[in-house]
Amino acid sequence: QLQLVESGGGLVQAGGSLRLSCAASRSIFGMNAMGWHRQAPGKQRELVATISSGGSTNYADSVKGRFTISRDNAKNTVYLQMNSLKPEDTAVYYCYAVAAFPAYTYWGQGTQVTVSS
Image (cartoon, rainbow, N blue to C red; front, top):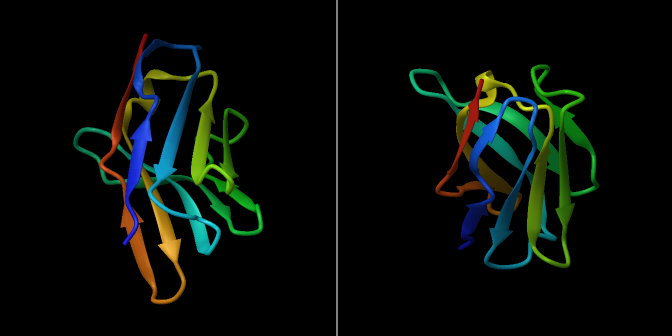
């Protein structure tokens, strides 16, 4: 079993920055991939960013150039640095981790990010 706890969300003005953290309850070394999704009110959950076990990253077009995902295996933590925030970035952000064997996806409880105009 793996528990993921997000932190770092909050209220920020447009153009500002936030750094989200996702702390895992045990080693993330064996996780195939980790990343972040978000869900805005009335919208479907969407992928924001992923990072593989090898460090390869992938981003949604809407956040490319503004968000950076990273992972620190020694601290069992994944980060999402969010710069130049826009009101449309307002959502609950969920951390996830994909285990290979057995195949399973773990989710955190979410952290609210609100960007005011």
